[in-house]
Every structure is written in C-alpha cells, then in structure tokens.
Image 1 (cartoon, rainbow, N blue to C red):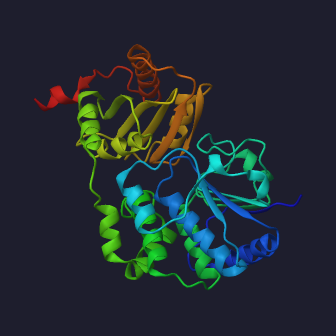
Image 2: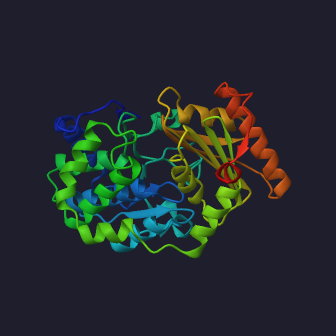
Image 3: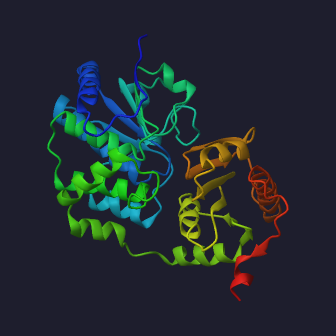
Length: 357
C-alpha cells in the first residue's frame, strides 16, 4: 500500500503543497462511504477545532457528514463553553460501531500514543497532527504530520484556505481560540504558520462568543482544586512538583501545570493526579534547553505512555490502584527521576505554602 506523507514544515503562504495533498486526499476519500474523525481522549481546543474544520472540509467538498468521536470527558470550563457555543457535534466513541465507517481519520493524536481510545487493530486512513511522527503512523495511507507547527488547527486552517472554502464566524472563532489556547497567545511554541493564521482569523471571529469561551463561570470544584494543589506543591530549586491525588476531571492536571508555571523562579512543573487506575501527568517548562516531551517519555518508560513537545508534554502511568501511600510513592519516584534528569538531585525541597508564610 502506498503511503502519502507530509512530515515537513510548510510555510503558511506555500499553499500549493497543501493544495496538492488535500486534492489527492479528497479524491481518495470521495465515494468511500461513511467517515469518522477520531480525536484524543478528554479533547482540548486544538483537537476540537481541528475536527470541526476537517468535518467542514468534507461537508463542503464531498457532501459528506462525518462523525466526530471522542472518549473520556470534556471537563475544563473553557472547553465545555467552546463545544457548546460553537455547536461542535460530538459523539462518544463508545456508542459508535466502527465497522460502519469506511474512512477513519485521526486528528491531534496518532496510533500508539496512549491518549486515544481507538482499538489498536483499527485501520487508520488519515492522520493529521503536529506531534512527532510515531512508527505506527507511517503505515497509514494519508499522513500530514508537521512537528514544527505549534497547533494542529493551523494545519486544518491551511486546508480550508488551500481548498478555497469559506470560513464563517464560528469556524474562525474555533480555529482562532485553538491557536490562542495551545500557544498561550503565541507565546508558547508558536511558529510563523500559527502566527499568520492567528492574525488572519482574529478579524473574522465573533468577539462575544470568544468572550463567553474565555471567561466561563467556574464551578466550586475549580477553586477547591487550586487550594488542594497549593497545599501539595513542593519546590526543588527551579522545579515545582504538584500532587493532586485523586481527581475527577483528567484535564485539571494540565490546567494546574499551566497555572503554576507562572510562579516566579519556576522553570519546570510536573503535575500529577490519579484517575481511573491511572496517574495522569503533565509537564510544562519555560527552559528552552530541555525537551518536555523527551523528559516525560523517560519518566514513564516501561510503566505507561507519553508524548509532547519542547515546552509541553503529557502522559500517564497505567495500572496504579489508588491510595494515598501509593500516590506518595509515585510522587517520590517521579520527582527523583525528574531531578536526576535535570541534574538537580541534591536540591533541598520546600513546600510552596510554607514559602509564602
């Protein structure tokens, strides 16, 4: 089977390459039958916007109505608001009969990453992602992976432009918010294509919808989680480790990492929380001399799965039954390993709350 792969950086204005790829991909998909778009578990704005855009591409060019499927939950208030305000049609993967679909697309994730619930024996036809390519992905028919891009939604924006598809207000708002969120307003791992898309999309957005998404009402649990995080945070020189113990929303681990990386003097954050017999992990760093994605893979080696980029990464440890003693052991193990990787083994820990009093 011939595989068509794009794994290089493509500048935003270089639409002919994207045009050729999308022309050929659409020609291959045309007439195949039902299409499903798989996004990663507990989807974030990037995966939601990318799926919305790919679905729009298929609707406009093929008169097809793909299903967008996800697993886990959408728990972060901003993400709930995004899905609701932009009317993104989402279907739980658990209620889908995969055999009915003739074309399987995967966005913002890849086979074997551990962050999606697609059965391992399912054949994937189309992969579009901005994370480093995985070995299993190379066997897929249509592969567009651009690790130099900061956002998968940027790639899909270029698809719509290359295919001369009208971008309405809600689509523009979705794509813009994905870039805004993923790159922290272009401050984190944003490259020229992301910046170009961000600036071109902003005038097209619905500012009221954008406000509703970025300023949702927050549940009481949000503030209780912050309180819990502050009480269970340790600082080792310029490294911060936070153990949230048991959590009810997996996304909160990354949310707390984003929150605490802003602490003065901190360059790297390791956040963790227990969910469904797994320990969810998130790393954030502002140190350009280290690679968060490589570090987290080393932390979970042999015990779980992980992936990421230079400044952001996520992963999980599998088969970890919950009790407080076990979570303390996991924290100690991961902390020692992280400090060893960063050559900070002899750092004296201090508690964040104590350091503020």
